[in-house]
Image (cartoon, rainbow, N blue to C red; front, side, top):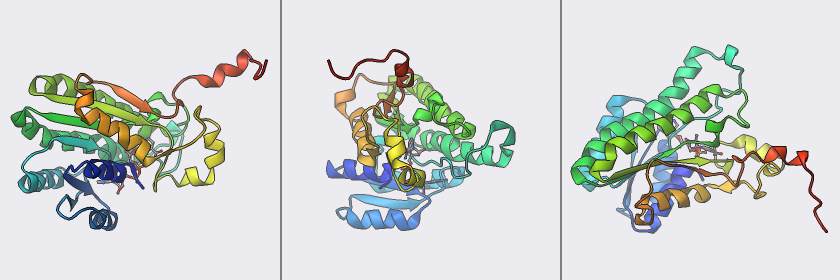
Length: 247
Ligand SMILES: NC(=O)c1ccc[n+]([C@@H]2O[C@H](COP(=O)([O-])OP(=O)(O)OC[C@H]3O[C@@H](n4cnc5c(N)ncnc54)[C@H](O)[C@@H]3O)[C@@H](O)[C@H]2O)c1
């Protein structure tokens, strides 16, 4: 299950109506079929194409009348394979930026006017531990795109605050999803790098997204929350001062 699907299932379990925008029509429609009727709709959308986003948001608003929560999840990661910065083709760089960053920008651009009119909105941008770079050698476009959605989140926080709009980012660590096939091959190896000792399921990321979108988090905005089992702390220097495991 992907992080977007887990978010939809989490919100739907609480009775929330969801609009799913994604390129993958098959996966989207399959999910709709598994949810209670009338709770969700799917609109095939390329989030990097402005006219498609504008039309999709328009239709979504027409369908449900309001937009309380926007979760910017759609993204691509190492689809092109790791490459050192001097070998990165501009077309690959542009592709990564257009989906991960421009997609987040466009979804926000077309949703925020309604949120402002409602004087209510919650936005969560899905970033990554890649904003810190560790473990992402050879993935400069991904690191840069994810750091940029954090910068965008900060800008939206300033602009949206006076209109009752809160905006945060979640930075997942390694999470078992369809896009992370590498994790399947290297699961044990990766688990050893996570302080809590396991790789997340998508729902482990969806739960904090739901929390940040809820009134429990009403005083939290402009924050990047790492949901990563501890991989973002600099634990890999621990060996310098060895500690006996048992007295
Ligand atoms: N899985 C991880 O370990 C991990 C870690 C950190 C961050 N993330 C981020 O979480 C988000 C979700 O990733 P996931 O792991 O669930 O992978 P996923 O492949 O299941 O989800 C990504 C979704 O984005 C959609 N998508 C891709 N390009 C699109 C476009 N142009 N327009 C619309 N939809 C598009 C795909 O169809 C797919 O459904 C991504 O932004 C990813 O970078 C994932």
